[in-house]
Length: 247
Ligand code: PEP
Image 1 (cartoon, rainbow, N blue to C red):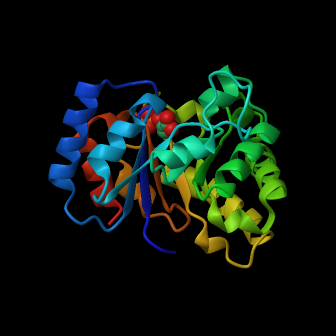
Image 2: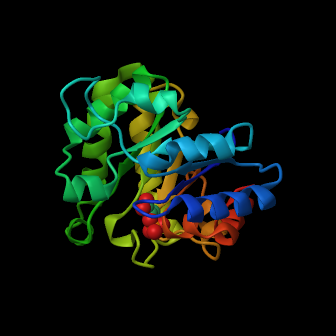
Image 3: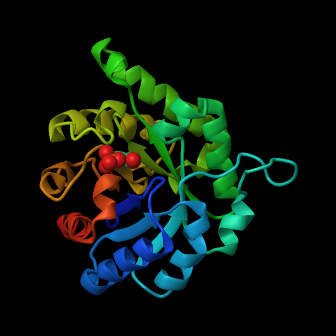
């Protein structure tokens, strides 16, 4: 496995002034990180991230992308537009998009395929709800979600990033234990191994209330290749501690 990847997801937070202060604090403290680092911002701020982060060790990306190439899709943002603003990553299938915007496994898979076609790395989120975990459906849910992407992208599966994000752990302060997370990551790795001879090439991130205190123990697990960080990516010191823990 190459370097770990720590990606921040700002969700619908920020302003020009707040982003500037946050990014400058991160750049002042980041040095030469051992991990790959990225920030995923709301679309209106991608030009700002491009200006602030160009030439720095921090890449940037979007939190979603259209499944369509271009045309009459009011409000949508295409992969070509993300390319114009230097995005390396696009989060797709975040549970908040699946839950509040009705995104199906097939739509998420098409978005992943669309991103890949433009040379943007999709960070594909999978994860079970609390009800699904309690019904012992965790494995079948994440496998179904990943299978749709494998089916859509074929041998390009090695070019994606997977983020395992148990829905019950996102923004709740409840974190999967390192053992719980590792067990699901191992399932996902095995599924990737059935689709490619190089399953270790795929970063499998953990997301769900990862913070400065719990990052090291999660990142020490053999199949946890980084983190997708929500709340803690809005605080420079916390985010930098997670980056350091991934070193
Ligand atoms: C997320 O939004 O992807 C996430 C993991 O959020 P948090 O870290 O706040 O739980």
